[in-house]
Length: 220
Image 1 (spheres, rainbow, N blue to C red):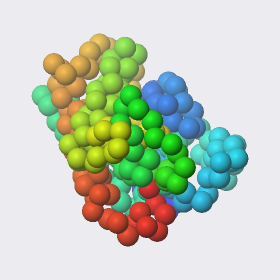
Image 2 (image 1 turned 90 degrees about the horizontal axis):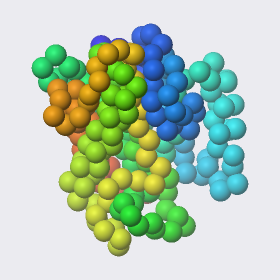
Image 3 (image 1 turned 60 degrees about the vertical axis):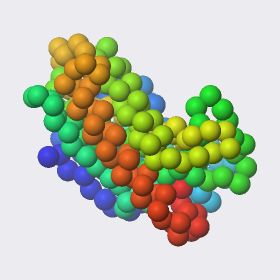
Image 4 (image 1 turned 120 degrees about the vertical axis):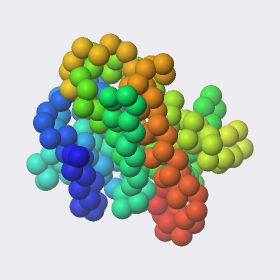
């Protein structure tokens, strides 16, 4: 298994080799070649409204020699990260997640940001099987669907409806380039991705909902 290293305020998933990573992460979004996926923990107070987040994160990554990584930001405690591995047929997917819900939203609506934290859900999915670009996009959609299902089943109710995610969620899918063309719900790839992401996010959501002290301390 590829190493996952906790070094607060950082969490690092080392992919072992450089490979395509598709995400909308703060650092190096889109489809890029990367060897590492990082999480950077922040307190809500570290992100004032006038901060240029990208510039601040770039300086943090430069100090670590990690500007080439795909990097998430999260205000939930990264020591509470969760992970799950799921196998279907000959496909294995690994999902690593940090889950904070202080920034929760119900899709199709928006709550005012005032007086709310910046908790978020950040998920990295690692696959050993080689994917085409189209399959990578489909894999990202399955991971997003699994995230939503896990949050909805957590039962967090907002004034706008049942929570489906947060306003600042991010997902990254890392897999070698290859010939596998499909990753939908009818495929072993889709099954493995969906189960791994669902389990990791559901575990994280349950932990967040049961830890009032962390939220009162300013974590999302």
